[in-house]
Length: 315
Length: 315
Image (cartoon, rainbow over all chains, first blue to last red; front, side, top):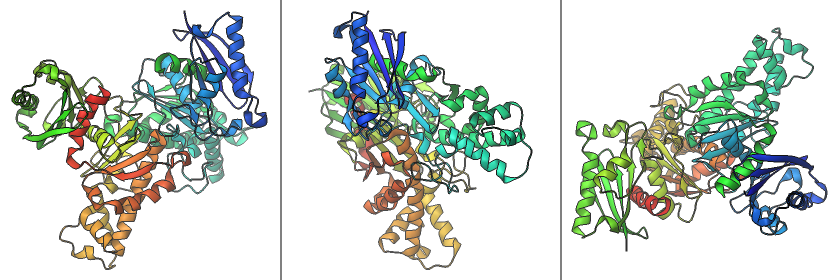
């Protein structure tokens, strides 16, 4: 039996996983992400943790097929962080060769964290059984990962799948973090839903349980939807209209079999999909209509599963 | 030396090409497309023409690496025309196996015609030297082909690259051929530009050479732009705004290095790109900004070059 490691590097912790050659998780653990000194210790910390694990299990380099790594920034096909990683303090550098040097030549395959999570959902989660998958992460922002024919699409600079910045509204005047206006992220992220809710409540005096919400966030909105609150339903419809429209554009370009919706907002459950699917159908080019919608299943483990999967199936 | 055939099946003619194993064109010719009887003779005609050519050059099956085929409809990875081909009268069927049977087992690789032309522009045309290419065809409609990491993206049903149906305007009330409103094709195709021109001329009495144009088409518009006609420039700006915006969405999803613009409208030349690029830059997610723009170079031969290329580099 041979083995694989996955390391999903986040702004607070690095999630690590030890897998067998069939992609089954044997053990997972976390180490803190040390962002001091422009994050220069992170690579050594991650490699050190992997080597410790190998030692404790009496494994040598030849027992390890490879290490998959997810990092919060654009990563190109050569393993270069083409724009660095702002959240970690990293400048542009070749993550692949940096890790391979510290791991005595064990093969390292790095990719963008959202793409890696998408890959995880394809191999073991909501997209299992499919080879043409778009994973959509509705968190603080809106991220995405595109897998076509079983292969992760990274693009020219590793920025493929940045679907949160597709323009879905020409009237919007508020600015997105990226500097533009009308981006999907402004309507479909957790932040975006909170913004839609505040705007809707300010528009008139219609009664709504949301007026008494302690925190007016995406959870409050979908909880109120489940309680049949009319104003909350309107907000969810607006969210669904924008997300459906944005994903229709995605489908016109890459024609996936399935969209897998994850991230904090997706904790609302299946009801969320019911607001998105009809709007998607309304906007998508008819031959691309067949795409299904499912919820992500792996939560925070999607990244490590994807890391292992990349090594086993893409490497 | 081994050889490759390419066959680009269109509604009027089938373009055929005979290539060496380096992808160099040795000979090209055409046969009419026989659309009678739901196009049931087309496969035999194409295979017959290929076999004749083999005979005249004293070649046997073992001299042929394969045959690439472009067809006007969605083609999935198994070579099935998933929606048939309306223009040829074809229903759903497996084009790959149908042709392989008639060609004594020579390997056949079919793909959508727009995708094949995109592939041709990557290997020998405007996208040469790049592996992440989106080819855009501005003809009667707007088609596209997406190549990432040197591989053609076909998607779940072979409908990937249908970028003409990305929604770029929420105000439009006229219907697109696909049944929706506000599709890119309604503004950036030859037909779309003619429509924009007619609308602009009707809006007021501003003087323009276009008022005397025999035919108010895309060519007339760009000829007038070259003569510094202010109204024509406005029309081209509107065209550029919509195309730039649509391609920005495409870039957010697949992050190409280069867009290669072809089709009848592209005969306007480099001046066309000058209306698109600044609008693209305005809308695209900043990390995807690097994409360049170039004109297609192979014209009607893009398809046969792409057919040969698929066999040599994808097969």
